[in-house]
Length: 324
Image 1 (cartoon, helix red, strand yellow):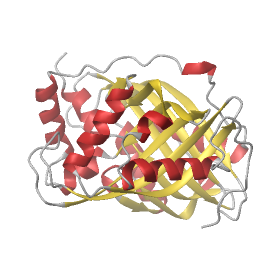
Image 2 (tube, one colour):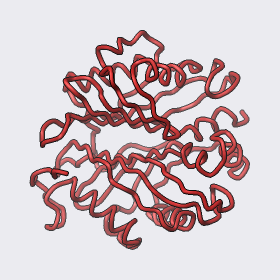
Image 3 (cartoon, helix red, strand yellow):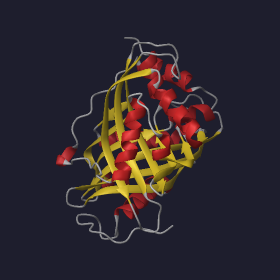
Image 4 (spheres, rainbow, N blue to C red):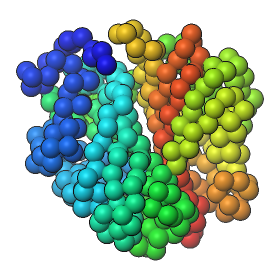
């Protein structure tokens, strides 16, 4: 794979010539080489980390979460698929890092007793990187894929977690540290894609032929693969068809062109909604839900040819099932 050219990395260790290299190297050191103490070197303390189901600020939570994950999946190896970036060294980079973990469920933990089953689960981490450290992270994992691979439905895992955690109690995330302002690209192709996702969320008619290539390949929650306009439209309508979206925000939108690669974009979005209809999440509950999603896409002649959608279906089920 062709790597990005050298760029201004002021404030970073001299060994790093660009952000792509920085993200791949520190990920390999922490996960592949099990250099857990390097978290203290490459993460600020405090560091605001938000997932769809939790908000933490203490660096000890990052360390403990890494150790716990390796206890459950001791052979876990995150395979880096792409890094899409925006920003700069002075104001702070934003890396949107997509990877898939190949691992075996060998330890007891939050996913229940060890099953010995092989698991493949994707994640995307959006990280603000400045002065050689990650200072803010948004992380979405495909928990549904893990559930399905170990013999549970996403709903069953959600019910287990609600019972163990005493209900739904996600904290409210604070502002980004250090004055970082998330980037929203003005690129018309990227903006058109973001507008299409908002259109699906608001149940508006989306002209798929203007946004998606005829041969679009979509990978969604649960690791489920879909092809073509009809199946992609069915996914988005299935997700939002049972929800009344009250607000939709594009939190980050980056577009990268050139470098011997297909044009590609990273989109982080957040929807506030009410579960009002039948559909993928059962009978209407009237519960308010929040969806934090991160999408990666690759374009061919201005249209989406490949789309990766990271939404945590387990956390969505938790919100729908939680007692008021």
